[in-house]
Length: 254
Image (cartoon, rainbow, N blue to C red):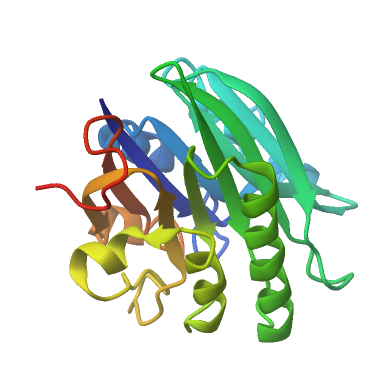
């Protein structure tokens, strides 16, 4: 069966300059892409000041507003809390989420980071999903890559399917090598021979946002570097089309 996977840092639902509320536009574009599983970072769980400032601010939390009827299963992991509200990572799914947990991987008090894990049942088999948002500081990121690799190694049986996606904030390769050691492969890198540049949207130079898989075949991966997405966040989304079953353990098809 086919599975479409999507990841994006949504910048808390406001434009780069923080002047416009753009969550309705994000939802419209997300519906057009129509992924089966959605990995989101910088999801605003609540923000009292922005709720008063923007008259069209959604009453529901952002992950629930985006999910609605298209993605009936949605989980949110709070990473950062402050007087006005909180934000974190979210996973939306068309398939049942059987269990989930948010792992605090913060390395400092001023950069609160998390790895949101969800166990999804797809095609009557488990699919282990990890949504990540890592540090800006290289030293912190390496620790978080190591912790993510440990989580994959210790919580997922070696023959089961895994998807890791999110904003790694990592333009280099040192951290990625730790994930390769536990069997994860970067979809864009394997498909195109390079990493997909996603940040910043006005002039994307850095490959910060990625989708990695294990025991899953991938037919295509794209950075959605369109004019519409450019106006919705400082990160372009990444989308991968996958195949479950058949040549299950191959990386590429087609």
